[in-house]
Amino acid sequence: MKILLVLSPTPLNIKNYSSSKDTEFPMGLCYLAAVLEKAGFSPEIFDFQLANNPIEAFADKLKENKYDVIGFSVVTPSFGATNRMAAIVKEVSPKTKVIIGGAHPSILGPNVLQEMPNVDIAALREGEATIVELIQFLEKGKPLDQVKGIAFRNDDKIISNGHRELIKNLDDIPFPARHLVNMKKYVPTPGQFFKLPILSMVASRGCAFRCAYCVDNLVWPKYRVRSAKNVVDEMEFLKNTYEAKEIKFLDGAFSTNRQRTIEICNEILKRNLGLIWRCETRVDLIDPELLTLMWRSGCLSISFGFESGDDEILKKMNKRTTTEQARKAVAWCKAVGIQAKGFFMLNYPGDTIETTERTIRFSRELDLDFVGFNMTTPYPGTKFYNEVEKNYKINEKCWGRTDIPVGNRIYFFQNGLSENYLKKAYRRAVLGFFLRPKTLLKILIRSFLFQIKNPRALQRSFSGLVRILQIKIQEDEKDKGLI
Image (tube, rainbow, N blue to C red; front, side, top):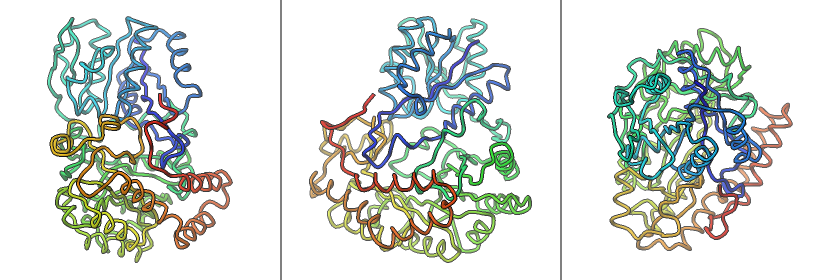
């Protein structure tokens, strides 16, 4: 069968905090491609991030190739654009089977097919085992009612076969099929690397925690990990095959399992890989001893989801961390020489001017190396979404529009936080951090130490700073570049 896997497009606006100049490696698609290759198929990958005139390029590719199956990886921000791309597929090649997978269909379940009339099949949750069996069934023309983990159309009916059992041993999954994409095209966000090339990895799936606003537990209902040996095997493979100098772990809480984290660090040291790496974790999942070992094994940067500088708001989020834990975590990182980065949310239910200002002050007091601020985004399918929809005044301009991958839309209003105040607070929170002399000096020092031999990296850091200076709250009537 002729198979095309597609990373769905998201609308872009380069004058915002995120930019079309930044590209994320299509990890999920490359995992799917790897298991398909192992099963004897030869899939192709089309990434909308990389194509010039992507819609035209996609349509031309469909006309030039008679694909039997086209699978789209869909997150909520790319839902609307995927709908349009699926229509193009059916217009050019009506007999091609259109499959969607990823976070958005996994959260919404079979109902997603009601909103996407040109999609034939939705793969729900973990896709590796499902996609192989599904393609085998389609190739043989067998009825789909025996394929677990999918919802599909049968005439005018939508049928769901329920969820497939999760893969028990993640080590059984082959490494992502990176050879199917141009790895040199995936460039990181300015300031988010020390050395190039930097390549991404995942060492676990799911999350052991239950933050009220997060969709991870809907997509990955159980936390599972790869073995330390398997993780470091991939790190070594990336170094030897792609000359990686830095690894970025995409796991939301890398150090959830302390003993396994120790094993990973020791395995890196044992092999003397000489790689820099970075990760994300929680403030309650580190300690000075662990951080020292992580630093020795090459970890130079950790990102934390602090979310708020107010302990009562943290309780409302079910974050299960405190501002005191955050202060200690940052101090411990600095003590061993690890860069500390932090992310915060504004306009969470219950926020006031006082808690908002407390969060902005807190982001300064921590003396972080980088901050990111987002307006709270209610994602469909979460309890948080239903709570906001039921109890708060909805901003009709933005509600339901998660089609911009920039977290500066105001989706709802609450007493005491006017639209004008939130816009000014957001801009002040970001610019107030990055325009401080201390922050600018850190950027210059980091550029000198790690990027001075790489003119391209220096240029990207400069362009990143320019974009920060242009930051603004997005206005719907001024949106440009939407697909």
